[in-house]
Length: 210
Ligand code: ADP
Ligand code: MG
Ligand code: MG
Image (tube, rainbow, N blue to C red):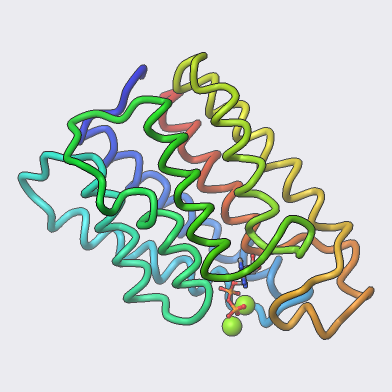
């Protein structure tokens, strides 16, 4: 796929939702090491709602509308900090965009950049704070640097960047959430939200690769 039309985009978001839902035990296990062990539960709940909303939507003529609806579904259903953070990852880059029938690599890179900016604005996490930003920030850089190579090449680079980002979170002391109170004891464990970002980007790559 060189671009994603409305139907492709909907199917990709459904594919990612199913992937996150099937990784619910894994994400919960990751969060239980240094967090409160609910990340998989929250993400799966949000993604079940995404599926419901996307299945209900008909006659959509803009790819951005799909991301917007999916992000809103997560925001409304997940609640808490991660609902806002992950809802924004879909919603922030898509809202207020003019209607568009297909998504190019450049569009996706721009969307993720806006989403990252919004997540940082809302959550105030920087690189090295052991959050999903440690995965999303390198994803955005990889997307921006590789958008001219096409959707699949861009997503392969973004997936690799996310993977490295997740690995990097193991080295960090946490600045947010329950892991913060663990101090140095959180070192050696990866961040749950960064892991979700990796799975989402990997899902995009898998869908586009077909
Ligand atoms: P909670 O921490 O409320 O239990 P989750 O377990 O669902 O929520 O999500 C935790 C994840 O949310 C963390 O692993 C981290 O990646 C992400 N997160 C938490 N706070 C922030 C923040 N301020 N900015 C960015 N990401 C954050
Ligand atoms: Mg948690
Ligand atoms: Mg919690």
